[in-house]
Image (cartoon, rainbow, N blue to C red; front, side, top):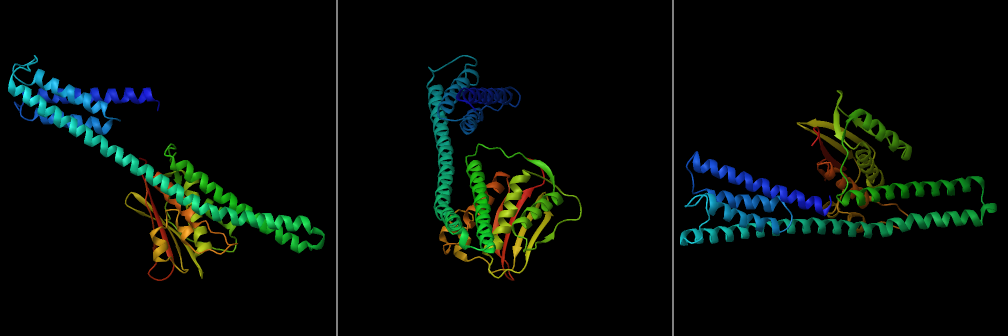
Length: 350
């Protein structure tokens, strides 16, 4: 939205709220014969304008307009200005001070919330950059070393050894592509400029697509599926939610040491669809649980060189996507064994 459009929007909001307060005050005065609440009503109108507009100017202008309206239409003599009477002057001063203070405090609260939200985004970006520094270096070094070995010693390597090196390069390249896609998603969504394009998606089709892509990357890992037998339609951006589920499944494969079983369950509670990814691996430490979705998780984990670990990035992506959908995501350790990741999506479009 351009500056001119924002200005027009703020002016229309100010005019509409003040007009509404004026009309309601007339009803209070002439229908219900209530005059003592009119000043309070205009102060409340200033509060609303300060909440709904940007900057101080609209609240201050509405405060002055409110004082003039009350003095002109709702104090004796009616429908003419009177700032000569001491009572009217004092009432006008008190009202304008209250209205301006209300406007100023409301605007400051809004600015503080905006600053807090921006600080949270910057913290997330900083955590991601710290995580990426290691996660990109390791596979790139491996790819470079493998490619150099293949180029310099091709004649000394058997066909089997060459295939092994090429497969390793392919796996590291696929992992890099996956991580870059995650980074692009969280950067794009983190700006707040992208509106999620929700469309009704059949749950069974979503899960089939997820499992197909997951099995291509991890053919040796089976996923136990438990979803409702009835057709369930969920409004979502299917591509982004697929990415969330795949990230959570990959997280279990890469970090759930000792895992033998992996479950993907979906159930409906009220107006929400609850997705649950559970494993029977080693679980998550209390320290890691505190920063699970912050992007700092990976940097706190002790990861030897040569191992892939994009848990912090992948889980940060999950949280960003789910929050953009208006849902919630959480992690916990199972009472029996392993970790449980759970997120919810609304069944109705917002």
